[in-house]
View (spheres, rainbow, N blue to C red):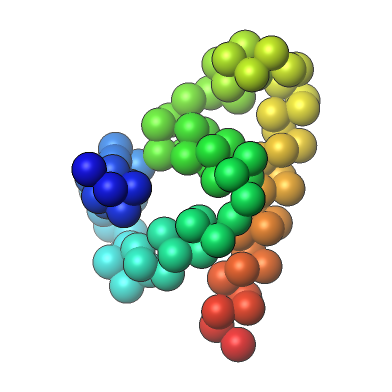
Length: 89
């Protein structure tokens, strides 16, 4: 199964759809942007948002503190935002 298929079928996308979020128009855009991120950013976002792992769980897995995971998440979201802004302009 490809990364796109895994993300499309993930619990996070279904959760957003259940909440009435119109994600269909943005799915390809977000997945394409994720693929452009460095692996450290991509893996943090995938684990936190798609696999619904807590920051505490990810910190334990990576052997770092929870505040360090939070900082990585913030940097990853900033990088994702930059990629999305570049593709939209």
